Each structure stands twice: as structure tokens, then as C-alpha cells.
Image: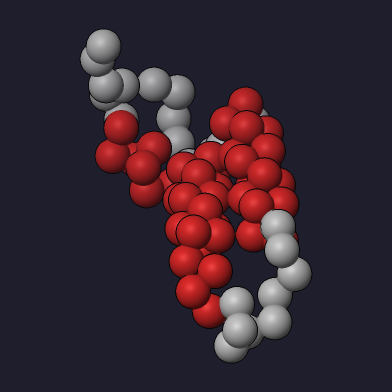
Length: 72
């Protein structure tokens, strides 16, 4: 496995990476949620659903050309 030549630009500008980071944060919140369920009234499964939507957006963003990043 080899990195693409412009991997730094991809990490910085690619929307798919941004969506995947957001999905990771939402998954982390889903894990921590049981600890604060009595303090903050949040419906069960909301962060799991948001994480699913975010991963779907990352998939779509991955196949759409982004002008900030040249082909690599």
C-alpha cells in the first residue's frame, strides 16, 4: 500500500475526510451518551442516525470531484 502523492492536500481539503472525522466524533458521543443521559434529554439513537447520515455524505463526497484537490 502506498500513499497518493498529494495526501496532505487530501487530508486538508477533502470533504470526505471532514465527514468521516465528524462521524467519528458522533460515534464517540454515542458511547459517552449513557453517562449523561439523566442530565441531557437526548432521544436514543439520534447520534447513531447522525453518524450514519454523515458516513453516507462522506461516501458521496468521495466520488465527487473537488476543485481544491488535484487528481492524485
